[in-house]
Length: 163
Picture (tube, helix red, strand yellow):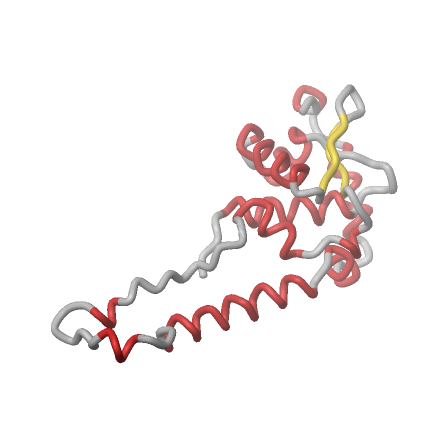
């Protein structure tokens, strides 16, 4: 399964926001500079997290993004689905009924075995992400990471601080 690079972006941005002090925010520009990402495209992804209820956004000079709920209540699956949707990556097109090796329709009444295996694997992947929260990720970060993250976000160049 290959996910778009925006999935990596939002997972890292949400983890970064989870490391802020309570009530703290980071702007699109700060996050874009922190990860060297294109701010306009990142803004679109962050807005998808707002629509999904993962983040909240505030406007104004001290505005930006923050988690909408405690990190322990936000699953990795919520974040992934906010930008990538929930559809399965494998789509069976019933090629077992095509070409020289085509099976007759009566042999294809049951779901394709390969489609069932792929669906099962996709559901296992989703279940794993459903059981992992941002809180779990934070618990595994080195203890120095949140302080470093906050310091570097605050050192963002003033010219790029606006969302």
